[in-house]
Image (tube, rainbow, N blue to C red):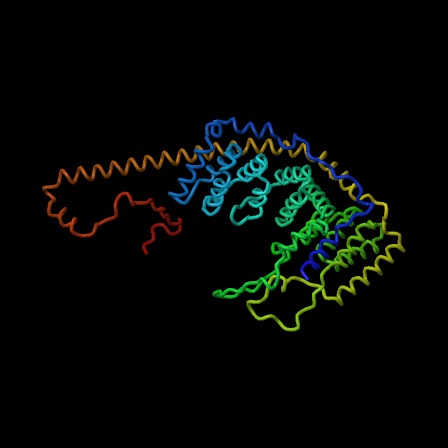
Length: 472
């Protein structure tokens, strides 16, 4: 049963037709977009130049072991020097970032730290490690910005790693931020390449082995039962749904034939067939001549044909036996047949109204639009990255000076405390014979006051102007 389900899911978009005959682009962004010269120039500043990353990482570990805390500036320095670290020590460095995430100082982490970490791991070829860190937001807190997302998608597209490129697009969709035009088009193109190169039946054998079998479910005793919840966003656990939802997100608001066509394909992969039929009806009822590509309708139709229908259970499952699959939206056989009938009727009306384009080169137009967007926004992005590098360097210097000032102040406090202790000891020696009885009494009993070393500064409370002078 499991193998049939997996094959049907992969079959829904494992085919292409003449409208998708354009060859994939090897690279979209120029080398200048990565700002390599300006990015490497940051290492020439004294703060980073004199840091030995191996010894520095050990010092960070020592401070975490001793104080269970570390300054955000220290982790920023480590991230910027990470590409100089011995590759065999990357597990050790990753653990440091994991521990840093669970400290209060992680709230002060700036944008430069994730940027530097992402670029360092990409530079040393640790893409699997990078993707794992990006996926685990809770334990690492590393988020993409537009520039790192663009660089990663372009790198994966150039390397024919379409699944990884699509993963970056999924991440942007889950964070609900596709406002940057270049980022949105690269995500769009990544999703297209992932759909076009979706695994065939032969490639699904590994997915079949990893698919969970009901007979292998193990029940364990727990203190309380948590009912499963499906939010149709972060809880999505099937890549086909993520691909569809991302494609819907990147084409939202695009009223062109290309935008509507990919939006329809996305709705099919996302299994939102009602919304897909509504989109076709809008195209049919549109006053101006609006078209949809034939390939998009055929892909949407295949998605509907291959969707696994599931009948609602006759009896509700007892608590503790429900899984995520039980609360996910599903389509019954009757609903599926009704949707298929509505789709056939809609196709006939669209053909009759001559609203279907059968010769539209979807991939070619998408690639052309993506390249045009690169030409329009790449120069501005390069300037913004150069400005960011300068700003991050300035902030790093300011934070360093603040830490030095705080360290000097702390050293002065410790010196004052030590002098007070010395004066106290000297006073006791001078007045020993006069106060010997009192001293002996104090030595026998508990201390009358806290040690000077434990004295902490207290915030001084000041009454508001209207309350000053009052006696309570």
